[in-house]
Length: 166
Image (cartoon, rainbow, N blue to C red; front, side, top):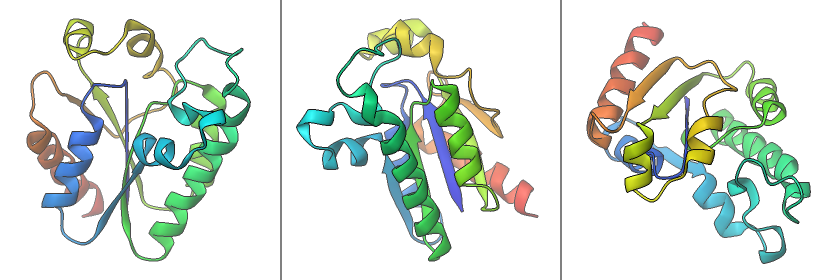
């Protein structure tokens, strides 16, 4: 199973992924923006963490291929029997379409991780991300981290997955 947590930085995606790892049955790998950035060389930073509206940034040329590698890695993990919770911030339509294509045929559950702009900004996030990140994917579930804890969000995801998989 693959759970893609899509949202702005500071929306709570990584905390939800950690809650999934701790509370869901089976082994859940956390692949996403933090892992990708940790293995991306400095000259391609911030890699898949590049903010919306920065097409001239030196890292922009690498973002599409870095996301492609991430999707293929997620698919490889799932095909080997490992579950994946992927925390990302997709704002580019081509990246979203590529995710859907590369993960096609696999059990994928897309979750929109949302919170109001004022909450996001209080956490250190930005309006640039808030306004762009939820326009590219159709979600199976939305969670609002201003109303739910990471554990509560994970519980909602688990409950919805049980319904879908039944």
